[in-house]
Image (tube, rainbow, N blue to C red; front, side):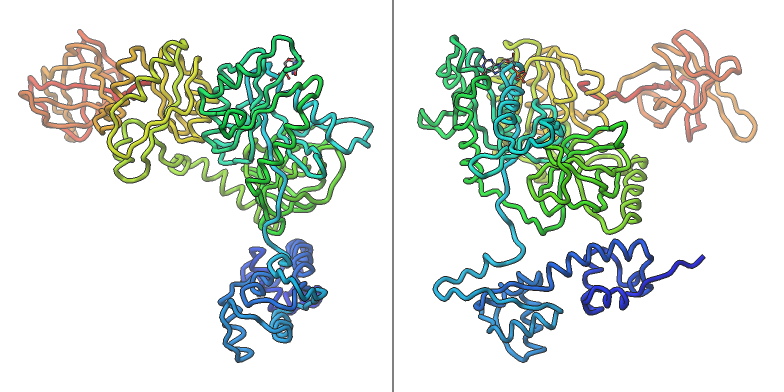
Length: 640
Ligand code: GDP
């Protein structure tokens, strides 16, 4: 049954714009010219109408100062200066360069050519700052803060204290919603806190390519000092190039010793401001609240210096901070908007799922219609639960969303595409360096004791490196190699070296899937030697051959249809069907392939051990001679 099609002309009339203008909008919305010509189906037309209405509405009226240049006019009209320059020349016969002024009359005409009207700003003869009036462009946005630090040092308590004292809206029966992030108000400004403390969230998100954090607040308990996870947090933040503010917590405790914490910080290149460095340290108590205001002010200060900006009118960009399945409401995801504005009714593709946003709630549980940059919102309407770190994109139609997700799922099934991009690994390091792909070897080191961590770190840093090559130990700690280490390695493009530790099984799986080079050693010298060799391009290939067994040809059987079988005796080890093998005659390799059939007394066998006879064939070979040796081997990954 043919569905009713809505023509562009009709839709344009309905929206009150020219068909040409609507076509341009359609292109921006991803509708091809051909599709537009054929007319739109009702569903698409509806979506286009909603979105176009907004775009038309936003763009139909330009608020302009009376003095502005071609470039400024082009910016406001979201066109390129050259396009506008060309238009002015061909249509109005004036040759103006992008920096020349457009007189108001001409500006109005040009705007009208594009279906726009101009509203003149009230004249302010003395100052004219045309750039400020641009309807689009980056605007200051609240900073996004992650709290990190060692367990029990007070991360949760600090987040709770700030939430309790700074989250303005509590009109919803005082129920605080935990959506994974909240916004605190400080001196009329907002700070977005991610309230999933801990490093996993931070690294897992970075591993998925989402860097949302602008500032890390490192919580260090003044009675405990710097501990392993403190160091890890410092490394995470440094690696992500995110500024650190140190909150020296628990200063209400009699045994608190903030000076000792500051002393310890210097060992990690964090020199407190009080001592002439540039690390801001604020003594606080998450229980009494002492110092917390100062901490918040410092966050705003650092944010101001960083000039954090985002364009609320730009294409939507966001990342999932947290997601869950709610029995009543279905999949829920907390999205942090990074660019553009998220609106109710938007059709989103989120990682490998999609959906039309039916409802959105802010951190106080209030229903909202839109969210601007740095604002976290919980959205309802996705078809499945996404994963933290998934990217959020807006698309023009449900059909397009479905298509993108299907493509992604399909791509995942294809092993060739599933392979992630090349990562740094020791075996290929030298080539990678020569190809200019990397100049840095980043290492995550895990060892069994602090003593070995220190010893290996020192020795690694002392290794001779070729010129221009840098070796960085981005994290060194005690403990088994965990999934978080792999995430960190993915985010930082690092190799993971272990000494006398295990690789946890989920870490192993993840490392394999994402091709992170993980190597475990039992002898320090071997670890150092391998890294040194890698730096100089002398490392053996990543794979090594391990001989499985050898057999000797004792008889040759010519069967029908040209099949020739080698009757063998297994001298040592075992011969394994399908294993790679080579035929050696008088010490020379005559043929290399694999064992394609293997039999013992007419029975097919998977393998035959030393001391037994067997009949075998090598793939692509028939010229066996008595006395030939057949060596069968397997390829093993080195250092795992
Ligand atoms: P997290 O593991 O880093 O999230 O640490 P928590 O916030 O759970 O705090 C661990 C313990 O330290 C809890 O018993 C808190 O009550 C306590 N605590 C946290 N901050 C302070 C503080 O500033 N002063 C005191 N005296 N205790 C604190």
